Structure formats: structure tokens, C-alpha cells
Length: 322
Image 1 (cartoon, rainbow, N blue to C red):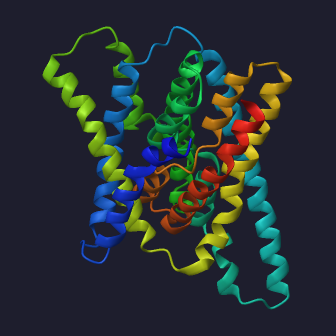
Image 2 (image 1 turned 135 degrees about the horizontal axis):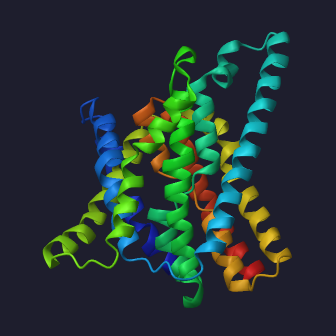
Image 3 (image 1 turned 30 degrees about the vertical axis):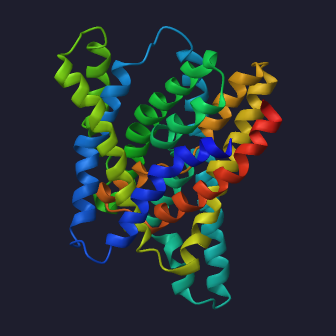
């Protein structure tokens, strides 16, 4: 298992490390440009390639139900946590605690990043690299379907809706704005196009280029994360990321594990769904933060913390569920 995790995380370490090193030398506009390019071009290419090579004949229903349930549950827990944070803010404000330490709880950009960090999992770059190596072949479809559903319904559905809501000023909030933003998400249309062309054989050059481009997309996402990680300022950022990180990697997969056990799913299916629901905070959160001007630092800190937690908790899932 150690060797498997080492190979899976090598690209993450290399490209993220490069981003950390290049932070001081790249133009200030590059991170946002890179994030927007991934949003409009890179990620849609990944979704298109995934949709074209996925067999949707069996297992999709179960993965879809668990994915949506986990997303809604995570959204509920994140919202409750925000309400508790606001109460804590008001209580400490009355006790003359310096406002600067807690004022971020009142910022819309921080609240949006908090929710995204709590519910969006990296089922694509990390999930599809790790989970297939830890589960049996007969439940691989569950892993793929969960990844597709998480990206389309979660990241570029609910995630875009939340990012759009918290990224606009109060006088700009309108439900039609959020719906419009979701409907124009390029990854959604890439997925639809991938489904419609699933049985269409593309020229070898195009098919090969599509699959090859995925490596560039993954490297670019890790590079962007490294640049943003270099902007993290001290322990305070990780303190802020603790709650969403625990919700994402510990609480949600634990509830999924209990629920799938109660409904009688076999161990290999339970393991697959628990692993995918407990993937670290999605790198796409940073991409959405770039697109909608949310708090990048909180999402970047959550990514670091959830990756560390994942490495610690995977052996526990294997013991309990395998």
C-alpha cells in the first residue's frame, strides 16, 4: 500500500513543489490566468475524456445516490458550522477579542470557500489515481461514476452555484444569476458532448491528443495549487482550515460508511464509496476561487490538511471495511 500511495502522489509532490519554488518569480496575474484557463479549457477536456471512456450501463444509480447524499449532507454540516462560527464571533466580540482574528467569519468570500472546502472532493486527479488500486475490479464502475457525478453535480453544479452566490456582492444576488452561471459551465457541456459522442470513434490523432492533454491538465492544477500554497501565511491559515478538513475527510466518509453498512452493501462496494467520499478537498476549489474571487488561502490550506489526513486515514478504512 505504501508503494501505491507513493506512485499516486509523486505528480502531486513534484508539480506542487515546482509551484512553491516558482511563486516569487511568476507574474502576479499568472495564477488567475492559469485558474481561468483550467476552468474554461483544461477541466472540460478531462471531463470529456472521462465521459467518452466510461461505461454507463451498470452501477451508476448507486454511485449517484451516494454522491448526491454526501454532497447535501456536507452542505448541511458546513452551513451549521458557519452558523456556529457566527455565534462564536458575536460572543468573542462582546468579550473584546481583537476583531482582526475573527472578522474573516463574516466575509462572504471566506464563507464560500469554507463550504467548497467542506463538500468538494478531489475524485478526479486523486480519487481515480488511488481508489482503483485499493478496491476490487468489480466495483471500479462505482469509483468512476462517483468521480463523474462529483465533478458534474458537485464541483461544476452545486460548487459553481455556491461560488457564484458568495462571489457576488449583496446587491447582485439573484437566483437567476447562479442558475445562469451553472448552465454556462463548460465542464457540463463537455460531459454532455462526451455522452453524445460515446459511441463515435474519433480520428486516432484527436483521441490520442485528448488523452495526452490530461497529463498537462493535472500538472497545471498541481502547479496552481503550489503557487497558492506559497501564499499561505503561517499557522493561522491551517487553524481556519481544520473544521472543513475534518468534515471532508473524516466526518462525511464515516457517515457514508455507516449508511452503506446499514443498507447491506458488500465490503468492496462500501470501501469504494467511502474512499471516494473521503477524497481531499478538490483542487477545483482553487479554480472556482480564482473565477469567482473567493478566499484562495482557506481552500489551499484545506487541500494541504486533507491530503495529510487522507494518508493517515486510508489504512483505517482498509482495516475496517476491507
